[in-house]
Amino acid sequence: MIYFIAGLFFGSIAAMMLYSVVVSGRINNLEDQNEVLMHELEQKKKELATYRCMYASSYDGFEETK
Image: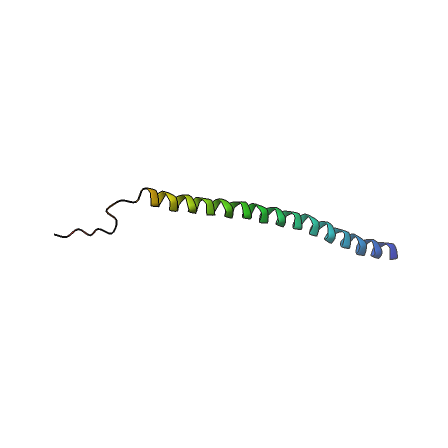
């Protein structure tokens, strides 16, 4: 009976440690993926700002009067 209780105790500790290793690996993977996506988003914002500046109409700010 004591071996059963000790096995249950140590087994649950081992399962928690294994679970924490797997979950921490997954979280690190998602954080890395998020960092890459945020970098791509910033690059696209810079490209969009450059595009807007390059192709801005010469009539921007011009209001038509009748």
